[in-house]
Image 1 (tube, rainbow, N blue to C red):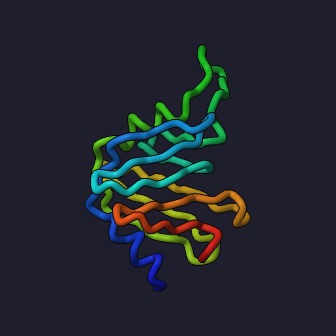
Image 2: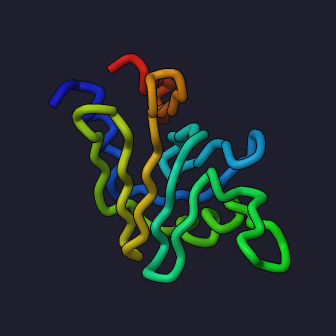
Length: 130
């Protein structure tokens, strides 16, 4: 495991305490220790009956109103402790598991859809620099 992967794992035990929308279904997730994660392409498994992603934003899928993916994400992860974090070896996607059994996956499809983790000490890791 490289130094950056080890540093990302240091976020275990933190909670998400704010989600700041940047555009459509992308934004910044703020953690209890002052770190933040920029997400643009992501998927959340909140429960057996609640699965959604950044790609679902503004889709109706037969519902009365379009989906608001970031609002659904807030409901699933805010004020919930991170139980584990891992990076996938081939693509460097982030998989975050929470104590409420929700799972958030943040994608780095081609190295151009960048996620960014900024730690409380100001250091930053970008997905396309692994």
